[in-house]
Each structure stands twice: as structure tokens, then as C-alpha cells.
Image (cartoon, rainbow, N blue to C red):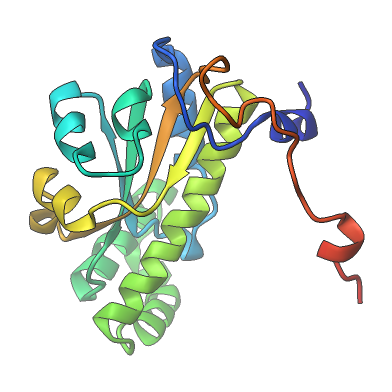
Length: 208
């Protein structure tokens, strides 16, 4: 399938079958997420792949998202809850290492990051980090569709419970959005045969 066909094929699956996503496909989706666009390339979020069925059952208790437990795999996108000088220093050092240059050559870039990030409140930076995680989520959805792997992005979960059970708070992270991966159960998914509803391009897009 080409990209447009893949995107037209996909939908937010409500009911998953028992087939598991091949590890090679899962790794390709994760690689794509890792290559996603990110402001200043900082990737102020982390992804947790939850395969443990008992843990997922506990995470899904009381949720209206059965995909948490029924899908082949569950990805948890968690945003950094605090951007400080150490975070910026680590990123500058890593960038210098990857590009094979001295950190001093990135002084102006570092100064720009400090100006824009350290002047904001922790909650403002968390909101920014969460938005970056959503960009990565979108990349993961598209990558899954290209591989004909079904995906369901999910909010409406118990963030505090996820943070506690996954030990996110100790890592300086807060869960923001989930992505279930697997294969649709067409016979039992009420939405599987529905035609996709999207605004006509003329209404959605304005060219100025």
C-alpha cells in the first residue's frame, strides 16, 4: 500500500484479536518513533513498551480502554516533568558526542535552549514536552499503518496509576498518552467496517 492507502486503511481499533505483532515490526515502529520530529531534537519524553500481561491487567483495571490489556503490545509515552540545567547540559554533551565536535561549538545553541526553556515554569515545560510526545505518537501511528499493524491512541487512562506502577515519578516522567498495537478483530469490532469520516480538503485546508 502507498501512504495514502495505509492511512485510509487505519482506524482506532476498539477490539483486538489474539495475533501478536512480530518483533521485527515492533522494532521498526519504535525506530520510526525515535526518528520523529522533535523541537530542537531534544525528545523530552520516553517510551515504555509494556508486554507483561499481569502488569497490563493491573494498568487496565477500571479503564474504559480494553485495548490496554487486549492488544499485542502497549506503548506508554511519558513526558519529562522538569527541564533544568542538567537536562540541557546532558543534551548538549550528547549532541557533541554524536556529531564529533567539542561542546564549546554548541555554545550559542545551548544559550538559546537556556533562554527559552529555563525561563518557563516547570508546568509550561511539561506541557511542551507532552506536545512533543504527541508528535512522536503520530509518527508511531503512521509507521504502524505502513506495516499494516493496527494502532489505537488512547487518553482517558489513570495517569497517576500508570506513573506509580511503571515507576515514572522516580524517573522524572509523567505518562501522557498510550498507543496499543496489534491486529483488529473485524468480526467483533463494531467500527471495523465503517467508512472513514474526514472533512473535505476544501473545508479543512485554506491556501492563502
